[in-house]
Image 1 (cartoon, rainbow, N blue to C red):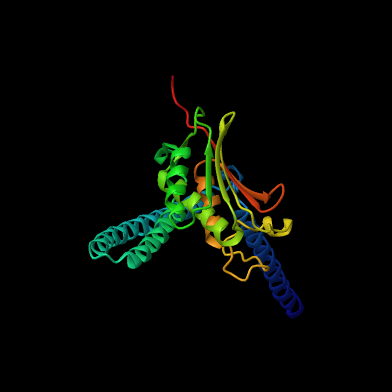
Image 2: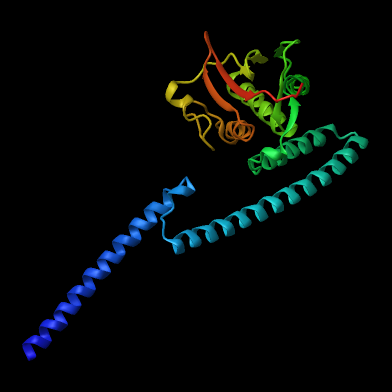
Length: 270
């Protein structure tokens, strides 16, 4: 009887250990499945798991929405304060401080653009050529070697937001000025159902392995003894993704770099 009792106790302990190991394996497998889910149809079929997943997703979405609203509200309030400050500085003739305020305002606009979420209902028809022309006129005040070209008869309207395109083109011009130099070219063309914005410079260009990482946030090119491309090109790619477009870079045919943004044309009913 004692032998049988010991046998049952040991068997229970072994079985408990086996069940514990099996449960840990199932938990790890479930965690991997949930972590790799991109399509909701791939959620495990168990109703409680699907319910828990939906609740977690709903809470995360609510938190992200609250964060974006707060970020947008705070940034807009700061922009309003800076606008008042800029007006006072202009009246006082302090152009040096006005330029500093403009730089802070540009940074806030970048924050607004980077924090924007993809929502097709919020997009509006904007003229890419007109925005590029205005940005080039602004930058010629501090860097005259900017050449702008566009097709007059072409339809260059896209679905986006004026602030997004303005900040994307501004960042491309700033990168071309700091890291490229020479004459900077900005060209807006229409090809089929797409609108293409191309910004070129006459710098030394980059290696292929460096070009592949240019749009990564805070990437630094080793050969440059300056701040890297970083947030500027990351914002460019984000704007293209928000507007259903693409962004990439490649070496120029002779020298320098070429940066492209391609957007689908805005649909205009007949």
